[in-house]
Image (tube, rainbow, N blue to C red; front, side, top):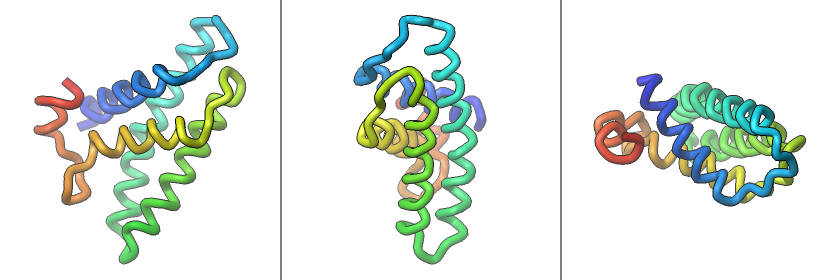
Length: 117
């Protein structure tokens, strides 16, 4: 399952990169930011899933965690880009969209066949 989450995070990151205007040409710095974002998205999948499953108010729990994740994405990029909340939101939502099925869990068969393959 972790391999699928990594692929989803990388796909979400690539989608984000289409809209980022970096203020550095240093490939090492940019690669480090990519690694941090992908690792964070993989880790936050479990946090987000547990928050939603452990709450009677699933939407509120999702919204709180989603906002926190977006702020963390912005903070990660603060030194190399002026990332907007909308851009951070897009990567977090895209990752969640391709990783969750309608039941709120990881849809690994669909991901490996279509979205993240």
